[in-house]
Amino acid sequence: MVRNFIVSITRSIISLVGTALAVAALVLMLSLFMLEQFGFEGGPYLGILTYLILPMIFATGLILIPIGAVLWRRKMNRISGGEAVPLMPVFDLNVPKTRNWLLIFLAATMFNIIILSAATYKGVEVMESVEFCGMACHSVMEPEHTAHQRSPHSRVKCAECHIGPGADWFVKSKMDGAWQLVAVALDIYPRPIPTPLHDLRPARDTCEQCHWPTKFVGDKLSVRKHYEDDEENTELTTALLLRVGGAEGTGTTGIHWHVDPDVSIRYRSDETREEIYNVELTDSDGVVTEYSDRKAPEEGGIWRTMDCVDCHNRPSHIYQPPGNEIDKAISAGLIDRTLPYVKRESLRIIDAEYDSHEAARVTITEELTQFYADNYPEVSGENSEAITAAADTLGDIYSVNVFPQMQVWWNTYPNHIGHEQSPGCYRCHKKSMRTAERVQISRECDTCHVLLAEEEEDPEIMSTLNPE
Image (tube, helix red, strand yellow):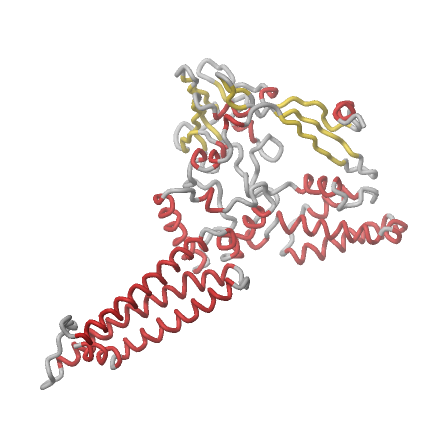
């Protein structure tokens, strides 16, 4: 019977094809695995090939082998006058040769299970890597991946926030990922990727695994440099004392009062969460206060319980406004502040739409060089290297914030921290948000920060903070 089973495999085209697929996939898997162990880096696609595609081919080949054998046996049984061949093989364990073949079969099966189990484990590891999330579908996720690499969370893997622990969210994420794969393959994905993500895991299960509200207590000093649009690029300083606050003792103060464990804040908004219609506050005593925007629609909208991402909506994918990026570059010395009107001209040139990053770099260099050649020929001659360096820096700034192929521009993804890039705090804390008794929602700015200096030249507070 063992002989008949082997014959049925070797004489079936389907079984032979399955054997060839399984052997070829196994050899390639082991070869690529060894290359990886010796330090070869092939990018995200090597991991996809080694631990996702090849294991599927290997498993398909293994499945085809018995299918081909069964089909061949059925074919033999249909031949007129042929010897009846059992559909399934019969193993007589009293025959030593049969027992030996069975042991070989069991050993091969265990080997296949080990191979597929290891490939499955490594496949999940690959699918949860930053390289897979950000680079496998390069054109789609390039903006988010680029922003993530520049963010404070650049060492945090995508899966830790977008999936988190637990089988239920893992399955949900893979189902969403299957649809994303279809959308990319058929080129039907939206441009730009819409935000916010309404199916994101709650912040208490992700953000608060590291950022405990009870551990962030007190105030934080923030000093920001800004440069005017005048010829000297005058440096102005803003100093803020941010009242971060947090849970301390029996109460919570400062900015993080909003996420006090004893306080619940719900709000109704449009799908983008940019327009907030109603706010419902339940304090520690269980008293409910409702605020409504008198201009808001009476129906529709989405109710949501406030958590970290309602203010920190861009914690890992931050796109800076062009003015802020230029200020940082001047402060860091990447753009020479002695170049006349360099802040004004940089902002004019960079705050534009170009067809690609390459086109942006060429045009930025041409326009900045032309400006100094026309208006400051002596600067153009003496400081040509500084002008070129400034143009290169502006090209870098544009390339990490604007992505024409995905229709991501400077203002596509507003940041709700503060109220400069978007209404931010004022989405809730606005004049039109009132109770039925016409009591306005709090608009006390010093709950969150205290201005020590606001766009001042050499403010006195800086001498106090840095006596030297």
